[in-house]
Image (cartoon, rainbow over all chains, first blue to last red; front, side, top):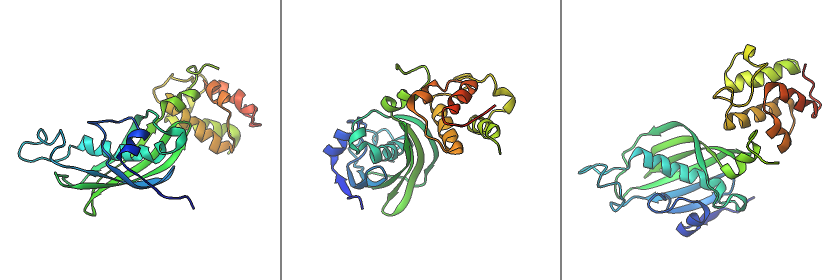
Length: 158
Length: 79
């Protein structure tokens, strides 16, 4: 049985290319590389977007929630040696759901799973909750250009 | 279902197009056959014919017609 590992902030920063102010994971509690993981993101009022979204009613914008989910999702494979620190591109986001207002002080717990990864195309799902209550989810297709482009007609040098 | 039907269905199902458009279809002729569409098509064909295509063949697979030639290398005969 594969060993479960945890990753701290520095491990995450060394595995993927999002940096401040667009890195939205604090810790990965555990990861089964190439399969699934559980990550957390702590939201404090010091987040850059709270003063603007919205004055007097700070809450996490939907696009940030999606980014949190996506960053957790890509870590299911970027934690593997062969994909470490590779650039990724969004290809498709579907079934995005937002069901809870996430406010300063909340901890978003994200469970992400990799359904498939073939020829530089990763497909999977991520779901976030706060205090055990469902908050957001989405299905993702992400490409790894450096892998993916090797398989495209007329774009590869033999 | 014979090999011709399986091959046609791989395209019509992946790209959501009608069979009549297939004979002259080339990579990037339609927006659905983009780079990711290409990977989906290859995966569908591999699944339907139970084969594993080589990288060079995936790159060369640039049209409906060309694909038939390539599949012969995997002992899949299509008219």
